Each structure stands twice: as C-alpha cells, then as structure tokens.
View 1 (cartoon, rainbow, N blue to C red):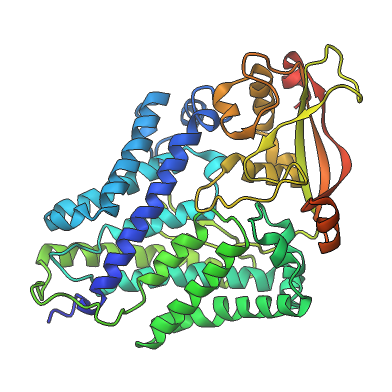
View 2: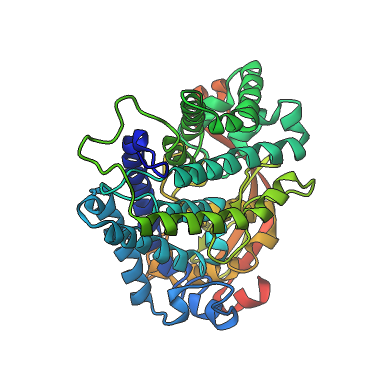
Length: 476
C-alpha cells in the first residue's frame, strides 16, 4: 500500500466533500440573492468603486477584469450550479484531473467575491471556507484514496480554528476566565436564534459548565486531533457535539457548519475504508503536486502560528490575498448590554416626534419586541449582521449607512428585498428616515407570560435625526 494515501478515510472524504459542497451552495446562494443591494453598481458599497482603487495584486478577483451586475449574478449562480453538481457527486464520475479542476471552480469564484466584498465579507468564515475549499481540490476522487498529508492539513485548519478561538478568549475578556461570559452572550450575540431566549434563562451554574466545557473543547481537545485513532475520532466527535450546541443557541452563518465539516475529515468511520476495487497507489503527478502544495501551505503557516503565540493575538486575519492560510477566533470580548438600531420612516410633510413613524423590520435582527427570533444559519443575513455592529459604534456604519438611508428614501427595490417588511411600498417611499438606538433585553418568564414579548426595549438616544433625501450626504 502506498504510504501517500489513507484508504481508511474513504468514507470520511466522501462525507466531507458532500458537506463542503453544501456549504459552498449556501454561500453562493447568499451572494446571488444579496449582492445587488450590497455590492452592485448601485449598491451600498459598489464593486466598481472598490476595484478602481484597490489593485488586483492586493485582492485578486475576476471582477478586476470586468464588472457588471449581470456578470456578478452569472458568477454567483454558476457557483451555485457547480456546488450542486459536487453535492450530487459528479466529481466521482470524472478523471482525477478533471475532478480537481471542478473543485477549483467554486474556490476561484468565491475568492473573487470575497476579495471585492469589503465589509460585507469581512467575516472569519469567509476565509475559512476558502482555506478549506482550496484543500478540497487535492483530496482526490474515486480514482485514489485521500492523501495523508491533505487530511493532516485539514486537521491543522481545525486546530487553528478551535485553539485560536480558545486563546483569544483567555487573553481577552475577563468573563471567560471567571466563567461568566455566558450570563450575557446568548442575549447579546449578533443574531439570536429561536432557542437563544431559553439558553439565556438556563441556571447560572449551567452557564459556568458551558463556559468551562468550551475552554476544554477549544484548548485541550484540539491537540488530540494529532494523536492515533480512535482518540482523534473521539476528539473530532466532541468538537461536532460542541458545534451543534452552538447551532442550537444562535445564528452564526456557516461558521459552525464548516467547523463540523472539518471535524468530519478527522473521523474514521467503521467500515468506511476504500472498496476492494480501489487503486492502492496514487499517480506520481498527483503525489508531486500535493506535496508541493503542502510544503507551500506549511511555509505560509508561519505568520498564523506567530499570531497564535503572540500576546497581541488578532482574530480572523488573512495573511495572503488568496486566503490560503489564515488565523481565526471569535468573541474575544462579550457585550454585557444589547443595543439595536431601529430604522423608521414617515410620509408626513414635516418630521415631528408625534409624526406617523413606521419601523422597517429586518429579517433576522431584533426589532418588534413580540417577534420571536428565527433560524437563518447557515444562510448569512449580511445587512442584519452589520446593523448589529452599527449599534455598537457609528464608526462601523460610516462607509454604508448613509447609502442605506438614501436607498430607503428612494424606495430601492433591491434594498427593500433585504428586509422582512417595509412599511412603505417602493413607489411611495417615506419623506423622512430616522434611526434610534434602543437597549434590548430578553424578558423574564413572567414578562413573557404576561405580554407575549420575548424582548423588552428602552430608548437610549437618536442615532440619526430625521433626514430627507437631499440631506443624507450632509448628516451621515
């Protein structure tokens, strides 16, 4: 048997590849349905404006060569089509080289989107999908068992995801060290899910157990990924259970799901070895290519490793424009209080406090206190996430919030499609828009029974005073 391959991980590779294709599909679908309002020619942060000032070498993308909304849509929907084909297992019917080329297509397309996505794509899971997707190119298909070195590199990604997140917590907010962060986190996280209210109301001792278990899973268990089986399988399985707990407690896009996909690659399924008809060697050209890529990735790992051991560790940073090796982390600090922006409009000729102000309802972020949070992950509501950051500080909203207000005042249909409900039809937009900052907290059990509301909110201050279309550029 060739030392280069690991036939015992035949089924592991199959599950990994199909699951990764599913994540790709969600990512491209998110891009296809949201890009026009966010990044399009009349978007909040237009791609043409970005590529005009950022050179190709800093952000390699097809859109440096050409951009139009139609071309972007073609790329996003092509990514959906290729991802669906990979999910259906088309790569298993192709020659090895053609299968690798097919896996390279969604990686190249998504890299092109991420590199022009600006703040809408500045999330760690974008780089994580690209780094994982690049390695998937070299996992092979039914013509060869999965290469040992690629399986190792997938574990190396998973180790950095978990261990980096664990270190940033221990070095960051003191509440992680005194085990109190989860007293707040379920309430103040970017986008609560349908069960977050219940997680928040778990007994405080259980929150301490949650936090301690998180430290064990992120700081101790990742080391076991590099031990012999079945210990590595047990470690990966524990990580999957932890991620499923996070899936239930909130909406974190596909972060949890891509982490689960990575963990699957470390599991050796009983009876999941290569079929008897499978080749017991790998082609020489394939071995040379995989080893060369592995050497490159290990070389590029220097800066992420230096970041891990640094006292000034940063989260979610890419060190190369291709996002080949990155650093990860999440929630180095936890908010104690939840703030939300409520955007309202009025058709009145003069904007007064007693005018008929009507609120815009977003799909995922809290708004109406009686509306229960929905489950959206792994689908990513990009505007809703950025609204959470905007509520933390106006600095986060500076590049795009003024354009959002303009589009609402214009009744822009693409922007309105990002929302759950607009109180004004596109052909009769409001005369004024305002934004107010509120403090939100989960209601108690008693308040929930009495009012039916899961949130209680208190006005804090104006974020944007009443603004007309001609005044938008001056006030924001």
